[in-house]
Length: 297
Image (cartoon, rainbow, N blue to C red):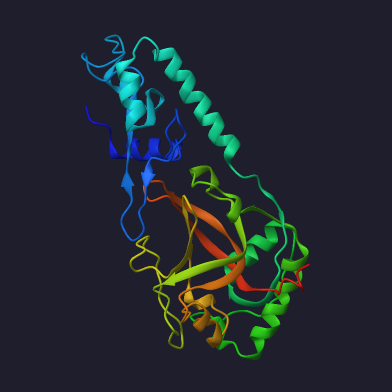
């Protein structure tokens, strides 16, 4: 029986797109082209009578269960099946367990981080209010009228930005620092990820929005969803951008830079991971122009 798509995606996510033996990434992404999957899901106990380490006493469901599967590069998949005496069921189970422990050890810890911006370009008001309450802060900010946008508020926008600035700059934001993350992993889902002076490109963000806002529903399709992104060496960080929370008309130009990218500081919460494409997608909470290096010392 072929592995279900759900099981395949789970294994790719569980092993963070890396070979359990050599630890190499098994997702190859060439510049300007789609990613190529160069890894294979291997059975610890063989799936067929003619395969390595087959056990007729194990049921088909057990053989195709996630506990009996490894993600390997093609080289090591071939090696474990050709050298069955060395790569016994028990040895492969140990390799599997040690690799998952190694991955856990490679995940970046959540540490205190302070936001330092010279001006806000994006404030996700409802999510920020929720976050502030969870951190024990109460933000007294003007109400955003229904079907309105931040850049329509006029003078009240200044009051709102000042209301958020004080708690945001005083609280130690518990976050994972994006530039310290070496690979995408599902265990980052739900965590706050922060970035400082990171260069982002943007896609599908309008130059302005009509009065009364947009009826925006994120579909998960990056071909149409408005977002910004930064490509690290082995993974890509994506932030969904709801144009309602772009602060000013001038800020719209910063999300559509003539030079192709803008340098930003901010944070958001990771909500999904795609290991096949080595991406982590987050909901942006705050984005701003970074302070000058002299001011941030």
